[in-house]
Image: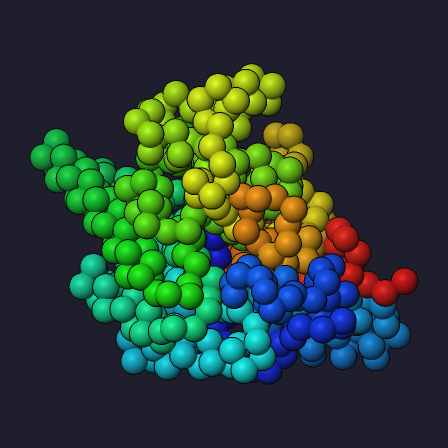
Length: 412
């Protein structure tokens, strides 16, 4: 259920620009000059430099006369995908961000930037990291904002930061601790959780003032929090000052499940904004007919009065993985699941008035981490190999994503 960070790379000119070739790859006609400057990028989402390992693997496949797979892998590598910002000083991240947005602007394209540096990230587990405290984080976010400036950008704020707050993190072993120590530990968790909400909200506020940036705070995925659980978290995280929220980052939920989850969250946010309670909102676990009746009665808002969302479709072409029943103590269905495929191509023309874009936020082909599925390891028992660390290129998974892409990406 957790997000994992891709390898960080400087953006280079592997951008898909407007025109017929880009339109064909993205499944959208060229944008017109009369459209909104951010919405008119269906054929010009920015493609940063790909992981060099993708091209090395494609070359190896070519030499092995697996030409269709090689072509599919190169097409995957060249497709627009996000640039993840993490682990750099304010000066470094300012310069990196500025370089990305300027390169994108030269190509008349809009980049997707992902902030991934919140303190206490991922409960110090698979994608551990982040800055030390709120002061450092505020300065770092300010530097990102300075780097963006007046440029166009789609900005995703801190995948998993609200879906996995410090209060959700597993406690360290408390053997030998007395009641006071346990209470102190809980107080520390509560303080860290309050700080997390403030950190995300401050980031949204800072980035939300930029004139041409569209900001989305992360909402997890449909198989994680229910709508009535995530909506209060989004509100505490400042979603009211954002364009909206992101769903399915680094996960595998189907397009249908993501669209329904996004609509329910958006409707619930609008309902709460008019004085309703999130606890009354329908969740993704309701029967759809019952949820639709509730929406028709309580949340019949025009799309321009609702929060919008973006969807990560990088690896959901085959939907989520269903682990073998009873086989694993902890199947980790989010961690390098087998037999998954690329999903819908990146585009801002989704056909859904609330879904602003389908994006490849997670870089497809990069590992989710070393998955043990409740075993002692070191091999991933589902794959029979030692999975690469989070963000490192995973050739086996990359080839699966290409072969099982839906829609297909390999030439016929």
